[in-house]
Length: 393
Image (cartoon, rainbow, N blue to C red; front, top):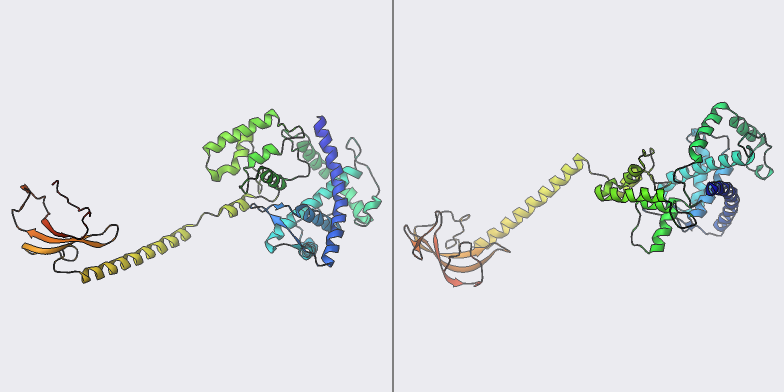
């Protein structure tokens, strides 16, 4: 219980520190930009922001959103915010070397940081120690960010019965988690990066249940028995489920449903869709059919090439003396000269001899099997060649 209370206090303190840090970082980044310094940012294979400069970009976005978006905004998807969002994205690109495809992540992060700022203002200034509403004045330190009208509207919304009911429900749900997160402001993406670097691992990602367990290890360095029980159950499930089903192992072990658009144990920025993109989407029936047609065409071309090559070899050799039944199906009666060929591992002549197409002929006093003729070898071009029908002698 004491640890949980300590974490709640730490969250409130770190939120205020984040605001101050955001202002400082924003000034430093903008000053660097004026000197031509553009910062590189990096992402893991699951599309999460990591170091170096991961925290810097996060703080910069937080400072931007607090300057550009009013605290009275309750719907981040509101189209009236498009102009402000465009300005935020433009400022990000001016200061960081970032691809256009990362815009979605940055905008989601901006919305998350705005919600965190509103929660901080409510908890810090509009509630007493018992959680009761306090009609506080606009804090002077935020007068440059928040107008008096916005502050009054913000307070009025917090007094609305519907809002208070929803807030109470969410607060109760989050007040006593069965497996509390114990890494403070360090998200799953940075935690995974730290673990891989510490272990000097060649892997590029870790299973969700491994991250989940590590995220619940406090300063003592020893996970709780309940956490270990869940982890062990995940390990057992991982042995029986396919690798593609790993994202569901943690939810199965916890016996809970997955949140829509999220992957439990992976943190902000990872979705089922992003994971499927990284692994590669399963091809459609049309794509499979096209691939099969292309493979068939390639096989047909190889077959024609092989037949053309074989025809050239046969033509160079004696058509008359060959006993190849494909090209000389009618073997004359009597004794005829022939050439002996093998086709594996490549087509070549291995000897010369005679084929005995004579009725009643015996081979070493034994009758020949049906459909077979006696062949005598006069010249062995390849003495160790294995004949298709060797005699026991």
